[in-house]
Image 1 (cartoon, helix red, strand yellow):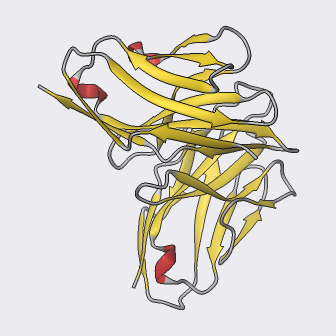
Image 2 (cartoon, rainbow over the protein chains, first blue to last red; image 1 turned 120 degrees about the vertical axis):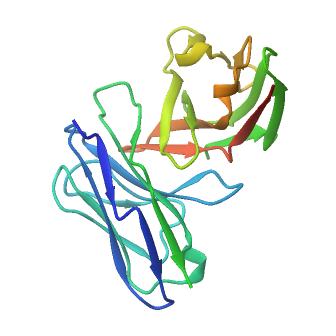
Length: 113
Length: 114
């Protein structure tokens, strides 16, 4: 049982490049989330998917897109990276019928130069 | 709108001393409240949660928190700090808006001195 996995662990992009962050969970959870973590700002929700086939914007969605590929996978895409998107990105999942605990992946550290 | 405020971005205690990390929230509906811990270069893991049962909630590693509705607070305590408690702690509030969303506080970094 791997829990929540994220790839890649580290990435450096040039301004204007695009990339997709991958996230997968093997706990059969309905809901999945993407957060970014910046010093002194806690975690801010970028997008979430309450269930397979649905996605919704969070607090800071500008510059990002998401795809809920199936129940297991939820990807985050940066179409044209900007230095302001330098951050640590966390994926999380939650079972609505359970304890409401979110399970987090190990994170992706992204630097945009 | 829901929000979470953690008082103090850094807290330093001596080993064996009381740990108190403060959290206040605002929520228009009965909240679900959480404390998460993050060790360096790792994701977050759940310490404890309040989901409208007992107001005093016990978690892992000897931590506990008390939900006080009148004060809109959910402070985290531990009677005796260990060196291994040094980490960043996040208070969070969840609400159901067709899918549960969680709002996190800015975090409090706990330092434990020998």
